[in-house]
Image (cartoon, rainbow, N blue to C red; front, side):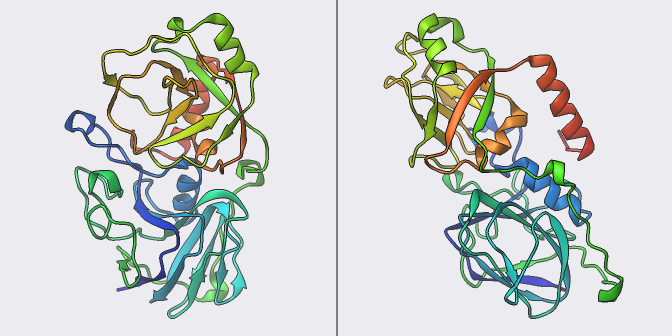
Length: 314
């Protein structure tokens, strides 16, 4: 039985899968991998099903020791990962031998990296998912807790490895590897209370440049830039969709993310296109962002291509 031991958990390392879907009626957040693009590629590179739990490592500084042989892959933010001190190329699979140590340094670009192990981690499911949601106290090795030093993750469905000379690494095609240094454009699907906002204010929203603030976490991404005014002072609390653009009284947008609350009473302009949310998950504080109007038909087709390629379970 192969295991991966946590030597250093880093700033924040969580067990994540595709999320706990359909539980909003119970007051629970969906959770799940923030960057679904990187998460899916990491599982794909080791031949896993798309709901296999893996590690979401935020900001780096994490370290793990293998007890047993395993096949791994890393995708997402570049954290200058090493295997026994030797650099690991991201966005491809690699062999890890018994006793070897995988180390993540500070993130050089992007915010979150994903570490998948062939077979996935044997972590209990709560309401259909192993995802850790700290605010709900569910998921993970210890309910609702980030990984801690000394935790041991059992690799399920252990595999017999071929001799190292026969191992062939799978590599993500270059066109699917994001450049996290590029200015971020987020496409908006207008909905909710969009018509409540002043036309001039919406023009400022689309023409302005916003910056991601330090007050950003897995619940929501807060922005600083031109104020969005003219929405109603408050609405009857309603369900909040993934990617909803909420406008609080100060006029500074908040995009609601995986661990968002299920209900809210602030007016909303609409939602960020789902296909763009993975890029937002990698935006660091200070990152410049522009919002642009999206075409629903084009965005739907892009999402269908992505979800069908990876055979996502939703």
